[in-house]
Image (cartoon, rainbow, N blue to C red; front, top):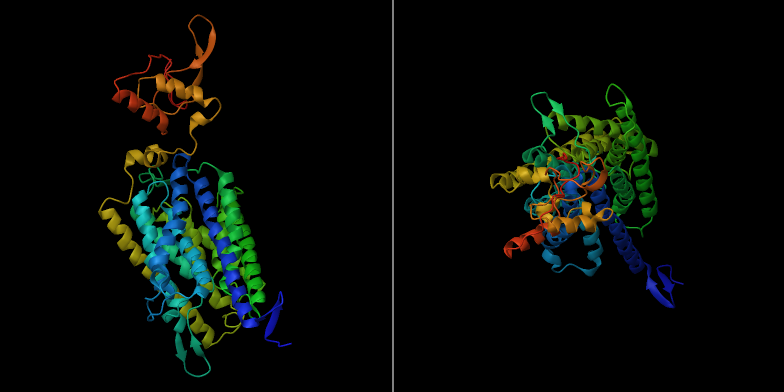
Length: 517
Protein backbone atom coordinates (compact mmCIF):
# COMPACT_ATOMS: atom_id res chain seq x y z
CA UNK A 1 0.00 0.00 0.00
CA UNK A 2 1.28 3.43 -0.89
CA UNK A 3 2.35 5.32 2.27
CA UNK A 4 1.15 8.58 0.76
CA UNK A 5 -2.40 7.31 0.24
CA UNK A 6 -5.13 6.37 2.70
CA UNK A 7 -8.37 4.48 2.08
CA UNK A 8 -11.69 5.93 3.24
CA UNK A 9 -14.88 3.98 2.48
CA UNK A 10 -13.13 2.12 -0.31
CA UNK A 11 -11.71 5.25 -1.93
CA UNK A 12 -8.02 6.05 -2.03
CA UNK A 13 -7.31 9.63 -0.93
CA UNK A 14 -3.84 11.24 -0.99
CA UNK A 15 -2.71 12.10 2.54
CA UNK A 16 -1.86 15.63 1.42
CA UNK A 17 -5.51 16.18 0.46
CA UNK A 18 -6.71 14.69 3.74
CA UNK A 19 -4.37 16.97 5.65
CA UNK A 20 -5.78 20.02 3.89
CA UNK A 21 -9.32 18.94 4.74
CA UNK A 22 -8.41 18.37 8.39
CA UNK A 23 -6.76 21.77 8.63
CA UNK A 24 -9.84 23.50 7.24
CA UNK A 25 -12.12 21.60 9.60
CA UNK A 26 -9.83 22.51 12.51
CA UNK A 27 -10.02 26.22 11.64
CA UNK A 28 -13.80 26.17 11.28
CA UNK A 29 -14.32 24.50 14.67
CA UNK A 30 -11.81 26.75 16.42
CA UNK A 31 -13.38 29.78 14.74
CA UNK A 32 -16.83 28.79 15.99
CA UNK A 33 -15.53 28.62 19.55
CA UNK A 34 -13.76 31.98 19.20
CA UNK A 35 -16.95 33.50 17.79
CA UNK A 36 -18.76 32.25 20.90
CA UNK A 37 -16.49 34.62 22.85
CA UNK A 38 -18.80 37.38 21.59
CA UNK A 39 -21.41 35.89 23.91
CA UNK A 40 -18.89 36.04 26.74
CA UNK A 41 -18.09 39.68 26.06
CA UNK A 42 -21.82 40.45 25.86
CA UNK A 43 -22.62 38.91 29.24
CA UNK A 44 -19.53 40.32 30.93
CA UNK A 45 -20.36 43.82 29.73
CA UNK A 46 -24.10 43.48 30.40
CA UNK A 47 -23.45 42.49 33.99
CA UNK A 48 -20.95 45.32 34.47
CA UNK A 49 -23.29 48.14 33.34
CA UNK A 50 -26.34 49.49 35.11
CA UNK A 51 -29.72 47.98 34.33
CA UNK A 52 -30.83 51.03 32.37
CA UNK A 53 -28.15 50.36 29.71
CA UNK A 54 -28.26 46.57 29.32
CA UNK A 55 -30.15 46.45 26.02
CA UNK A 56 -27.79 49.04 24.58
CA UNK A 57 -24.64 47.12 25.42
CA UNK A 58 -26.14 43.83 24.25
CA UNK A 59 -27.17 45.12 20.83
CA UNK A 60 -23.69 46.56 20.37
CA UNK A 61 -22.14 43.17 21.10
CA UNK A 62 -24.59 41.47 18.77
CA UNK A 63 -23.76 43.85 15.96
CA UNK A 64 -20.01 43.54 16.57
CA UNK A 65 -20.22 40.17 14.86
CA UNK A 66 -22.30 41.48 11.96
CA UNK A 67 -20.61 44.83 11.38
CA UNK A 68 -17.30 42.97 11.46
CA UNK A 69 -18.69 40.44 9.00
CA UNK A 70 -19.50 43.16 6.49
CA UNK A 71 -16.34 45.22 6.98
CA UNK A 72 -13.92 42.31 7.12
CA UNK A 73 -15.43 40.56 4.12
CA UNK A 74 -15.41 43.64 1.89
CA UNK A 75 -12.14 45.26 2.99
CA UNK A 76 -10.49 43.69 6.01
CA UNK A 77 -9.33 40.33 4.71
CA UNK A 78 -7.92 41.93 1.57
CA UNK A 79 -5.92 44.46 3.57
CA UNK A 80 -4.71 41.76 5.94
CA UNK A 81 -3.96 38.71 3.78
CA UNK A 82 -4.19 39.88 0.20
CA UNK A 83 -1.12 40.14 -1.98
CA UNK A 84 0.48 43.53 -1.59
CA UNK A 85 3.52 45.27 -0.15
CA UNK A 86 5.15 45.27 3.27
CA UNK A 87 2.48 47.62 4.63
CA UNK A 88 -0.89 46.50 3.27
CA UNK A 89 -2.55 43.91 1.04
CA UNK A 90 -4.88 44.76 -1.84
CA UNK A 91 -6.37 41.60 -3.35
CA UNK A 92 -9.40 39.42 -2.55
CA UNK A 93 -11.76 42.32 -1.78
CA UNK A 94 -15.18 40.82 -1.03
CA UNK A 95 -13.62 37.34 -1.54
CA UNK A 96 -12.82 38.11 -5.17
CA UNK A 97 -10.75 35.24 -6.58
CA UNK A 98 -10.28 33.80 -3.10
CA UNK A 99 -9.58 30.04 -3.40
CA UNK A 100 -12.16 27.78 -1.82
CA UNK A 101 -9.50 26.29 0.44
CA UNK A 102 -8.95 29.71 2.09
CA UNK A 103 -12.50 30.28 3.27
CA UNK A 104 -11.75 28.51 6.54
CA UNK A 105 -8.83 30.88 7.08
CA UNK A 106 -11.08 33.85 6.31
CA UNK A 107 -13.63 32.70 8.89
CA UNK A 108 -11.07 32.14 11.62
CA UNK A 109 -9.39 35.51 11.02
CA UNK A 110 -12.77 37.24 10.92
CA UNK A 111 -13.47 36.07 14.48
CA UNK A 112 -10.23 37.72 15.61
CA UNK A 113 -11.24 40.99 13.94
CA UNK A 114 -14.59 40.90 15.73
CA UNK A 115 -12.77 40.41 19.03
CA UNK A 116 -10.59 43.48 18.42
CA UNK A 117 -13.70 45.63 17.91
CA UNK A 118 -15.53 44.22 20.93
CA UNK A 119 -12.74 45.28 23.27
CA UNK A 120 -13.61 48.92 22.62
CA UNK A 121 -17.33 48.59 23.40
CA UNK A 122 -16.70 47.89 27.08
CA UNK A 123 -14.55 50.99 27.57
CA UNK A 124 -17.13 53.35 26.04
CA UNK A 125 -20.18 51.71 27.61
CA UNK A 126 -23.20 53.65 28.95
CA UNK A 127 -22.61 56.93 27.09
CA UNK A 128 -21.57 56.27 23.46
CA UNK A 129 -23.89 57.09 20.57
CA UNK A 130 -25.12 54.08 18.63
CA UNK A 131 -24.14 55.64 15.29
CA UNK A 132 -20.62 56.24 16.60
CA UNK A 133 -20.45 52.58 17.55
CA UNK A 134 -21.27 51.52 13.99
CA UNK A 135 -18.61 53.82 12.59
CA UNK A 136 -15.77 52.83 14.91
CA UNK A 137 -16.59 49.11 14.72
CA UNK A 138 -16.59 49.21 10.91
CA UNK A 139 -13.38 51.25 10.75
CA UNK A 140 -11.50 49.04 13.23
CA UNK A 141 -12.42 45.73 11.58
CA UNK A 142 -12.26 47.07 8.03
CA UNK A 143 -8.98 49.00 8.19
CA UNK A 144 -7.15 49.62 11.49
CA UNK A 145 -6.88 45.99 12.61
CA UNK A 146 -6.34 44.39 9.15
CA UNK A 147 -3.38 46.65 8.36
CA UNK A 148 -1.62 45.63 11.57
CA UNK A 149 -2.47 42.00 10.84
CA UNK A 150 -0.75 42.29 7.47
CA UNK A 151 2.44 43.58 9.10
CA UNK A 152 2.95 40.22 10.81
CA UNK A 153 0.57 37.43 9.82
CA UNK A 154 0.23 38.68 6.24
CA UNK A 155 3.98 38.68 5.64
CA UNK A 156 4.64 42.40 6.22
CA UNK A 157 7.65 44.18 7.66
CA UNK A 158 7.24 42.89 11.24
CA UNK A 159 7.31 39.33 9.90
CA UNK A 160 10.19 39.91 7.50
CA UNK A 161 12.38 41.47 10.17
CA UNK A 162 16.09 41.98 9.53
CA UNK A 163 18.76 39.50 8.51
CA UNK A 164 21.65 40.18 10.88
CA UNK A 165 25.20 39.21 10.04
CA UNK A 166 26.98 36.24 11.50
CA UNK A 167 25.21 33.47 13.36
CA UNK A 168 22.28 35.64 14.48
CA UNK A 169 20.22 35.28 11.32
CA UNK A 170 16.78 36.77 10.68
CA UNK A 171 14.95 38.29 13.64
CA UNK A 172 11.50 39.84 13.54
CA UNK A 173 8.54 40.53 15.76
CA UNK A 174 6.84 37.46 17.27
CA UNK A 175 3.20 37.24 18.31
CA UNK A 176 1.61 33.80 18.05
CA UNK A 177 -2.04 34.57 18.90
CA UNK A 178 -2.20 38.35 19.09
CA UNK A 179 -1.17 39.83 22.44
CA UNK A 180 -0.06 42.83 20.42
CA UNK A 181 -1.87 42.44 17.11
CA UNK A 182 -5.32 42.01 18.68
CA UNK A 183 -5.23 43.08 22.32
CA UNK A 184 -2.76 45.97 22.37
CA UNK A 185 -4.53 47.39 19.32
CA UNK A 186 -7.97 46.97 20.90
CA UNK A 187 -6.78 48.30 24.25
CA UNK A 188 -5.22 51.38 22.64
CA UNK A 189 -8.39 52.14 20.70
CA UNK A 190 -10.43 51.61 23.87
CA UNK A 191 -8.27 54.08 25.80
CA UNK A 192 -8.47 56.78 23.11
CA UNK A 193 -12.21 56.30 22.73
CA UNK A 194 -12.91 56.45 26.46
CA UNK A 195 -10.64 59.48 26.91
CA UNK A 196 -12.28 61.50 24.13
CA UNK A 197 -15.75 60.38 25.16
CA UNK A 198 -15.26 61.54 28.74
CA UNK A 199 -16.33 59.83 31.97
CA UNK A 200 -19.85 58.81 32.85
CA UNK A 201 -21.84 61.32 34.85
CA UNK A 202 -20.93 60.92 38.51
CA UNK A 203 -17.83 58.81 37.98
CA UNK A 204 -15.24 61.41 39.05
CA UNK A 205 -15.62 64.25 41.54
CA UNK A 206 -12.94 66.72 40.51
CA UNK A 207 -13.05 68.97 43.56
CA UNK A 208 -12.45 66.17 46.07
CA UNK A 209 -10.52 63.96 43.62
CA UNK A 210 -12.89 61.12 44.45
CA UNK A 211 -13.51 58.17 42.15
CA UNK A 212 -17.07 56.95 42.55
CA UNK A 213 -17.85 53.29 41.95
CA UNK A 214 -20.77 52.94 39.54
CA UNK A 215 -21.65 49.32 40.18
CA UNK A 216 -22.91 47.03 37.45
CA UNK A 217 -26.35 45.53 37.91
CA UNK A 218 -25.54 41.79 37.93
CA UNK A 219 -22.44 40.01 39.18
CA UNK A 220 -23.82 36.56 38.15
CA UNK A 221 -24.29 37.66 34.53
CA UNK A 222 -20.78 39.12 34.47
CA UNK A 223 -19.40 35.89 35.93
CA UNK A 224 -21.16 33.84 33.25
CA UNK A 225 -19.52 36.03 30.62
CA UNK A 226 -16.15 35.47 32.26
CA UNK A 227 -16.54 31.68 32.16
CA UNK A 228 -17.48 31.80 28.46
CA UNK A 229 -14.40 33.89 27.73
CA UNK A 230 -12.17 31.44 29.61
CA UNK A 231 -13.52 28.69 27.36
CA UNK A 232 -13.14 30.73 24.19
CA UNK A 233 -9.58 31.79 24.91
CA UNK A 234 -8.43 28.17 24.76
CA UNK A 235 -9.52 28.03 21.11
CA UNK A 236 -8.27 31.57 20.50
CA UNK A 237 -4.74 30.59 21.47
CA UNK A 238 -4.77 26.91 20.54
CA UNK A 239 -6.39 27.56 17.17
CA UNK A 240 -3.68 30.05 16.25
CA UNK A 241 -1.53 27.10 15.22
CA UNK A 242 -3.78 27.27 12.09
CA UNK A 243 -3.23 23.60 11.27
CA UNK A 244 -3.55 20.17 12.87
CA UNK A 245 -2.37 17.77 10.14
CA UNK A 246 1.38 18.34 10.23
CA UNK A 247 3.79 16.57 12.51
CA UNK A 248 4.03 18.45 15.79
CA UNK A 249 0.80 20.44 15.33
CA UNK A 250 -1.04 18.53 18.04
CA UNK A 251 1.78 19.05 20.52
CA UNK A 252 1.95 22.77 19.69
CA UNK A 253 -1.81 23.20 20.20
CA UNK A 254 -1.66 21.28 23.46
CA UNK A 255 1.24 23.37 24.77
CA UNK A 256 -0.57 26.60 23.84
CA UNK A 257 -3.74 25.52 25.65
CA UNK A 258 -1.90 24.31 28.76
CA UNK A 259 0.20 27.48 29.03
CA UNK A 260 -2.91 29.61 28.57
CA UNK A 261 -4.76 28.00 31.47
CA UNK A 262 -1.65 28.05 33.71
CA UNK A 263 -1.08 31.74 33.05
CA UNK A 264 -4.76 32.48 33.73
CA UNK A 265 -4.69 30.50 36.98
CA UNK A 266 -1.69 32.28 38.43
CA UNK A 267 -2.95 35.66 37.21
CA UNK A 268 -6.29 35.07 38.95
CA UNK A 269 -4.54 34.32 42.23
CA UNK A 270 -2.10 37.24 42.04
CA UNK A 271 -4.82 39.76 41.16
CA UNK A 272 -7.03 38.48 43.97
CA UNK A 273 -4.23 38.61 46.56
CA UNK A 274 -3.27 42.13 45.52
CA UNK A 275 -6.88 43.27 45.84
CA UNK A 276 -7.11 41.60 49.27
CA UNK A 277 -3.99 43.34 50.57
CA UNK A 278 -4.58 46.54 52.58
CA UNK A 279 -1.70 48.32 50.86
CA UNK A 280 -2.78 47.91 47.21
CA UNK A 281 -6.40 46.78 47.34
CA UNK A 282 -9.65 47.18 49.24
CA UNK A 283 -9.23 44.15 51.53
CA UNK A 284 -11.93 42.13 49.77
CA UNK A 285 -12.05 38.80 47.96
CA UNK A 286 -13.40 40.25 44.72
CA UNK A 287 -14.98 37.97 42.12
CA UNK A 288 -14.84 40.54 39.33
CA UNK A 289 -11.19 41.37 40.01
CA UNK A 290 -10.40 37.65 39.89
CA UNK A 291 -12.16 37.28 36.52
CA UNK A 292 -10.36 40.29 35.05
CA UNK A 293 -7.04 39.05 36.42
CA UNK A 294 -7.52 35.64 34.80
CA UNK A 295 -8.47 37.26 31.50
CA UNK A 296 -5.34 39.41 31.68
CA UNK A 297 -3.27 36.25 32.10
CA UNK A 298 -4.88 34.72 29.02
CA UNK A 299 -4.32 37.88 27.01
CA UNK A 300 -0.64 37.92 28.03
CA UNK A 301 -0.27 34.27 27.05
CA UNK A 302 -1.35 34.95 23.45
CA UNK A 303 2.07 36.16 22.30
CA UNK A 304 4.13 33.12 23.23
CA UNK A 305 1.93 30.35 24.61
CA UNK A 306 3.42 27.99 22.00
CA UNK A 307 7.06 28.67 23.02
CA UNK A 308 6.94 28.77 26.83
CA UNK A 309 7.76 26.10 29.31
CA UNK A 310 4.83 25.67 31.73
CA UNK A 311 6.91 27.19 34.53
CA UNK A 312 7.35 30.23 32.28
CA UNK A 313 3.56 30.51 32.06
CA UNK A 314 3.50 30.60 35.88
CA UNK A 315 5.79 33.64 35.91
CA UNK A 316 3.79 35.20 33.09
CA UNK A 317 0.53 34.80 35.03
CA UNK A 318 1.80 36.18 38.34
CA UNK A 319 3.07 39.36 36.70
CA UNK A 320 -0.10 39.60 34.59
CA UNK A 321 -2.14 40.06 37.78
CA UNK A 322 0.22 42.85 38.82
CA UNK A 323 0.01 44.44 35.35
CA UNK A 324 -3.78 44.45 35.52
CA UNK A 325 -3.86 46.39 38.80
CA UNK A 326 -1.12 48.75 37.66
CA UNK A 327 -2.85 49.70 34.42
CA UNK A 328 -6.25 49.96 36.09
CA UNK A 329 -4.73 52.44 38.57
CA UNK A 330 -3.01 54.42 35.77
CA UNK A 331 -6.23 54.75 33.78
CA UNK A 332 -8.14 56.01 36.84
CA UNK A 333 -5.36 58.45 37.70
CA UNK A 334 -5.59 59.88 34.20
CA UNK A 335 -9.30 60.52 34.73
CA UNK A 336 -10.36 58.04 32.04
CA UNK A 337 -13.56 56.11 32.78
CA UNK A 338 -13.31 52.48 31.68
CA UNK A 339 -16.35 50.59 33.06
CA UNK A 340 -14.99 47.15 32.10
CA UNK A 341 -11.27 47.77 32.80
CA UNK A 342 -10.80 46.87 29.14
CA UNK A 343 -7.61 48.92 28.86
CA UNK A 344 -6.05 47.21 31.89
CA UNK A 345 -7.00 43.72 30.70
CA UNK A 346 -6.15 44.06 27.02
CA UNK A 347 -3.48 46.72 26.78
CA UNK A 348 -1.96 45.87 30.15
CA UNK A 349 -2.01 42.13 29.53
CA UNK A 350 -1.15 42.43 25.85
CA UNK A 351 1.86 44.71 26.30
CA UNK A 352 3.25 42.53 29.09
CA UNK A 353 2.74 39.44 26.94
CA UNK A 354 4.66 40.97 24.04
CA UNK A 355 7.57 41.93 26.30
CA UNK A 356 7.53 38.67 28.27
CA UNK A 357 8.16 36.59 25.14
CA UNK A 358 11.65 38.07 24.89
CA UNK A 359 12.44 36.77 28.39
CA UNK A 360 10.54 33.48 28.59
CA UNK A 361 10.94 32.02 25.09
CA UNK A 362 12.31 28.53 25.73
CA UNK A 363 14.93 28.86 23.00
CA UNK A 364 15.52 32.57 22.37
CA UNK A 365 14.54 34.14 25.71
CA UNK A 366 16.90 36.28 27.73
CA UNK A 367 16.47 33.97 30.73
CA UNK A 368 17.66 31.04 28.60
CA UNK A 369 20.35 32.68 26.48
CA UNK A 370 21.99 35.88 27.65
CA UNK A 371 23.41 36.83 24.27
CA UNK A 372 23.11 39.33 21.43
CA UNK A 373 20.39 37.37 19.70
CA UNK A 374 18.09 37.40 22.73
CA UNK A 375 18.75 41.12 23.12
CA UNK A 376 17.69 41.72 19.53
CA UNK A 377 14.56 39.64 20.09
CA UNK A 378 13.73 41.96 23.01
CA UNK A 379 14.36 45.03 20.84
CA UNK A 380 12.04 43.74 18.11
CA UNK A 381 9.31 43.00 20.64
CA UNK A 382 9.55 46.56 21.96
CA UNK A 383 9.55 47.95 18.41
CA UNK A 384 6.47 45.92 17.50
CA UNK A 385 4.68 47.06 20.64
CA UNK A 386 5.54 50.70 19.90
CA UNK A 387 4.47 50.67 16.26
CA UNK A 388 1.17 48.88 16.98
CA UNK A 389 0.38 51.31 19.81
CA UNK A 390 1.27 54.32 17.65
CA UNK A 391 -0.79 53.14 14.67
CA UNK A 392 -3.86 52.25 16.72
CA UNK A 393 -3.59 55.44 18.78
CA UNK A 394 -3.26 57.73 15.77
CA UNK A 395 -6.04 56.10 13.76
CA UNK A 396 -8.35 56.02 16.80
CA UNK A 397 -7.62 59.65 17.55
CA UNK A 398 -8.62 60.62 14.01
CA UNK A 399 -11.73 58.45 14.12
CA UNK A 400 -13.04 59.33 17.58
CA UNK A 401 -11.86 62.94 17.25
CA UNK A 402 -13.87 63.40 14.06
CA UNK A 403 -16.97 61.90 15.70
CA UNK A 404 -16.55 64.23 18.66
CA UNK A 405 -16.03 67.23 16.38
CA UNK A 406 -19.36 66.55 14.70
CA UNK A 407 -21.02 65.91 18.10
CA UNK A 408 -21.82 62.34 17.11
CA UNK A 409 -19.79 60.58 19.78
CA UNK A 410 -21.69 60.96 23.05
CA UNK A 411 -25.38 60.82 23.93
CA UNK A 412 -27.05 63.92 25.44
CA UNK A 413 -26.85 64.27 29.21
CA UNK A 414 -30.56 63.74 29.81
CA UNK A 415 -30.53 60.46 27.89
CA UNK A 416 -27.45 59.28 29.75
CA UNK A 417 -29.15 59.96 33.08
CA UNK A 418 -32.36 58.15 32.05
CA UNK A 419 -30.46 55.31 30.44
CA UNK A 420 -30.06 54.37 26.79
CA UNK A 421 -32.38 51.36 26.64
CA UNK A 422 -35.70 53.18 26.21
CA UNK A 423 -34.74 56.39 24.36
CA UNK A 424 -32.44 54.60 21.92
CA UNK A 425 -33.94 51.13 21.57
CA UNK A 426 -37.45 51.24 23.02
CA UNK A 427 -36.68 47.96 24.80
CA UNK A 428 -36.04 48.03 28.54
CA UNK A 429 -33.97 45.01 29.59
CA UNK A 430 -36.00 44.66 32.77
CA UNK A 431 -39.48 46.20 32.26
CA UNK A 432 -40.94 46.52 35.73
CA UNK A 433 -44.46 45.74 34.58
CA UNK A 434 -43.18 42.25 33.70
CA UNK A 435 -42.71 41.47 37.39
CA UNK A 436 -45.56 39.93 39.35
CA UNK A 437 -49.03 40.98 38.10
CA UNK A 438 -47.61 43.67 35.85
CA UNK A 439 -50.63 43.74 33.54
CA UNK A 440 -52.69 45.41 36.27
CA UNK A 441 -50.26 48.27 36.68
CA UNK A 442 -50.14 48.75 32.91
CA UNK A 443 -53.93 49.01 32.65
CA UNK A 444 -53.97 51.61 35.40
CA UNK A 445 -51.31 53.59 33.61
CA UNK A 446 -53.24 53.59 30.36
CA UNK A 447 -56.29 54.92 32.15
CA UNK A 448 -54.30 57.73 33.71
CA UNK A 449 -54.26 60.87 31.59
CA UNK A 450 -51.21 62.30 33.36
CA UNK A 451 -48.03 61.81 31.40
CA UNK A 452 -45.44 60.93 30.57
CA UNK A 453 -46.10 57.89 32.69
CA UNK A 454 -43.17 55.98 34.12
CA UNK A 455 -42.78 52.33 34.88
CA UNK A 456 -45.00 50.88 37.51
CA UNK A 457 -44.69 48.84 40.69
CA UNK A 458 -45.77 51.54 43.11
CA UNK A 459 -47.80 49.29 45.34
CA UNK A 460 -47.76 51.02 48.69
CA UNK A 461 -49.28 50.58 52.09
CA UNK A 462 -51.71 53.44 52.52
CA UNK A 463 -53.61 54.89 55.42
CA UNK A 464 -57.16 55.59 54.38
CA UNK A 465 -57.61 58.27 57.01
CA UNK A 466 -60.37 56.43 58.87
CA UNK A 467 -58.05 54.37 60.98
CA UNK A 468 -58.09 51.51 58.50
CA UNK A 469 -54.92 50.37 56.78
CA UNK A 470 -55.47 49.54 53.13
CA UNK A 471 -53.32 48.48 50.19
CA UNK A 472 -53.41 50.43 46.97
CA UNK A 473 -51.45 52.46 44.46
CA UNK A 474 -49.90 55.63 45.78
CA UNK A 475 -49.36 58.92 43.94
CA UNK A 476 -45.58 58.77 43.64
CA UNK A 477 -43.29 61.57 42.53
CA UNK A 478 -41.76 61.08 39.07
CA UNK A 479 -38.11 60.21 39.67
CA UNK A 480 -37.37 57.08 37.72
CA UNK A 481 -35.21 56.53 34.69
CA UNK A 482 -37.42 53.99 32.95
CA UNK A 483 -40.51 54.37 30.86
CA UNK A 484 -42.95 51.82 29.57
CA UNK A 485 -42.86 52.23 25.77
CA UNK A 486 -46.25 50.57 25.33
CA UNK A 487 -47.87 52.98 27.76
CA UNK A 488 -46.18 55.94 26.15
CA UNK A 489 -47.52 54.93 22.74
CA UNK A 490 -51.00 54.38 24.16
CA UNK A 491 -51.01 57.85 25.72
CA UNK A 492 -49.78 59.41 22.48
CA UNK A 493 -52.58 57.67 20.60
CA UNK A 494 -55.12 58.92 23.13
CA UNK A 495 -53.82 62.47 22.81
CA UNK A 496 -53.98 62.33 19.01
CA UNK A 497 -57.59 61.17 19.07
CA UNK A 498 -58.64 63.74 21.64
CA UNK A 499 -59.43 61.16 24.30
CA UNK A 500 -58.19 60.92 27.82
CA UNK A 501 -58.06 58.37 30.54
CA UNK A 502 -60.27 58.26 33.55
CA UNK A 503 -59.29 60.43 36.44
CA UNK A 504 -57.61 58.29 39.03
CA UNK A 505 -56.29 59.68 42.26
CA UNK A 506 -54.08 56.64 42.64
CA UNK A 507 -51.64 57.57 39.87
CA UNK A 508 -48.90 54.99 39.32
CA UNK A 509 -45.30 56.12 38.99
CA UNK A 510 -41.91 54.81 40.09
CA UNK A 511 -41.90 52.90 43.34
CA UNK A 512 -38.43 54.06 44.29
CA UNK A 513 -39.44 57.73 44.28
CA UNK A 514 -40.73 59.60 47.30
CA UNK A 515 -44.38 58.88 48.06
CA UNK A 516 -46.71 61.86 48.36
CA UNK A 517 -49.21 61.23 51.14
